[in-house]
Length: 230
Image 1 (spheres, helix red, strand yellow):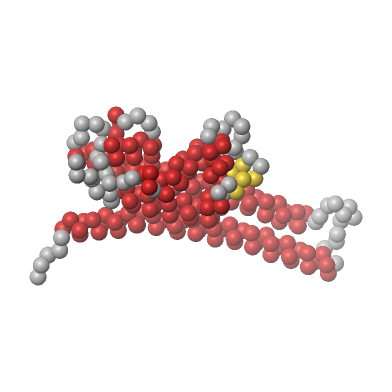
Image 2: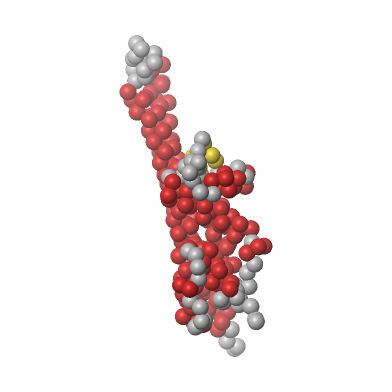
């Protein structure tokens, strides 16, 4: 009985570990969506029940027609809070996924740095974050990856601007925000799955899922890329 290729065996394990690292993010996103939907259903059901009681006369309608019963006002306020919380949760999820991309690329750089003992280290490369890591991997370790032909890389560059907008400007695209026009152009693309309400960028489940898929595909192609033979 022939033994299998040990290199392939270890590669398969690495890929399984890679997939496992993302499974928690997919599960968490689904948990967030279920929670938000549950909260909406709770308030909408309560509104329907209160309106039925108003129709039957069980609850008196205020004399001032511009007012509403306190219980009804509570649920409408609750729906508004859910919408606000939704934006916060999805923004937090996206920033976390982007941080995961950044940290995994940095870790990969340090792993190669220890293994290959190149003259240049990651700390020698100008820049920060994802851009610095990719420069190091391509210029120093010569991985076989063309960023110019990568649709994921194009998105990730826009993700970087969006991340900065959320972290440093609470998601607002004011006149003073750097790269404002570039981010607005990205948001306005139908494929971005983002919305712009006045000067605020609104994230949703569809965008978060697409961002997660994009980061996973890009990380996979980067971390399992072979080095060019020079």
